[in-house]
Image (cartoon, rainbow, N blue to C red; front, side):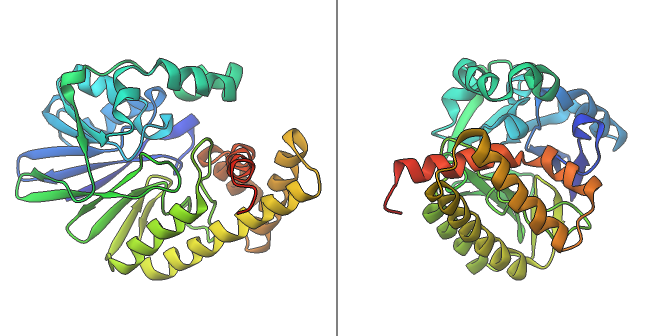
Length: 296
């Protein structure tokens, strides 16, 4: 059984999810959310009749703070944390990750993300493409899915795929797809390859960290692939018009805001999207790709 846990990031529903996997007496957690939402996560687990200490296996799709910020806490409680090999060191020694995020978020860092603590090295297990882990009678399989980040894994369990950020951001009740492109590793070529891989796997359901279950899998992934291409080209066009820095971020945000409004997103839901995926920061990620790949 899959339990979708709404972590109520910044006291707002439907922004960040964690997923509790129940298989007989065994429990696993996919995504931890940020450290700032750990108290909510623990209360949600208890509200479903489970003891947090019964969770012995934790899977994170990648080490960005909204997905793995509480991973160290779980590891310090004795849980095994599974992660891509390229992300493991950032959980064991998160100082560089935290310093980078502080440069981006400034004074907002602590209220947004909380205190990410180190994970004991012996509690971190790295997974490669195709590796499987048993949870009771079920198994979870890792898929190497770069594009949003080079250390990104999706997880497959009984016809469902937990996509992290590789299938984008779509809030419940909204049609707008926001492209998750935070720096420094956005790569549209790898991204599109990963989306194609998910599409070709014919999953019955997707579970997005931002946010929740998607059942129209084929159309969602087809639309999202188109969006990745569109925003990549849009930022390149803005850069060709000599926009950079704050001007680039503002122009890209306006383009995305207009796109969302055209398909019926309310201003309230736009602000929720901004909590789920900061548009200006995504502009920076796409621009960085073009700076590194001027001929792309």
